[in-house]
Image 1 (cartoon, helix red, strand yellow):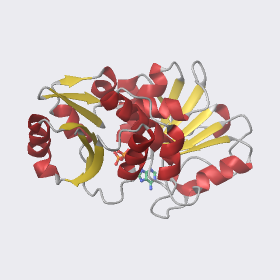
Image 2 (cartoon, protein in one colour; image 1 turned 180 degrees about the vertical axis):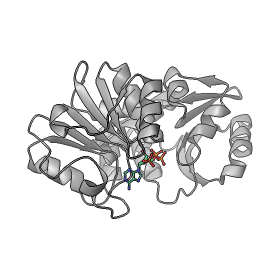
Image 3 (cartoon, rainbow, N blue to C red; image 1 turned 180 degrees about the horizontal axis):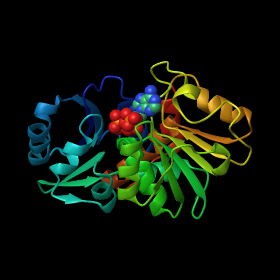
Length: 264
Ligand code: ATR
């Protein structure tokens, strides 16, 4: 009976177990496959994963904060996305070998209403989540500008991933705006912290906020009010999870079942 799990620290808040369990049930695999959560401290990560990979009952794991770089580092094989992003969110165990992938990149593209190839895109942030977004959008052919609070970090990430760093972007210039920062989670004023104003948005723009909260974020509320197409972090969570499940099971999971589970 193949097992799956999400490994994080902390992990209790993760929506992946409910979401993936619903997807497995919809595929008719619930009796065969299980998906749980493992809280593993950073010091124990490598040993734990090596044991899971060697034991044979685990098909793979999702990896979340703070383990994504460590997951990539210990892999025997790395997908081009994981290698370029410098992080893995999906590990597969095959014959004792560890294969690393990053479905945050494909999940981001899948959560968007269309491709932005050839169009100007603004990514806010330069951390791990930003690296996946920038790599995916550049790979898809978008012209990506990166703004980051700490400019030097934004410049370094942009140069490495084929994007351009900008200091004072005009939001109206972009077909797509992606917020990868956690601004909005800790109660900061989104429009103080980011180079955006509540009236920045236009119809025809798409705005993706990776933050996921119970209520729509201030960013998405303002964007929706302007008639922009909005995508939230839960849709990205669903899409990256669906890609991971496809890697492990070879099956096409029901996005609707996953969306319902994640929004419950
Ligand atoms: P993650 O892996 O989730 O991207 P991270 O690597 O810690 O997390 O990166 C956090 C990102 O959010 C960074 O781009 C950070 O900006 P700095 O590089 O200047 O630290 C950004 N960020 C966090 N809090 C912020 C705030 N209050 N205002 C603006 N940007 C913020």
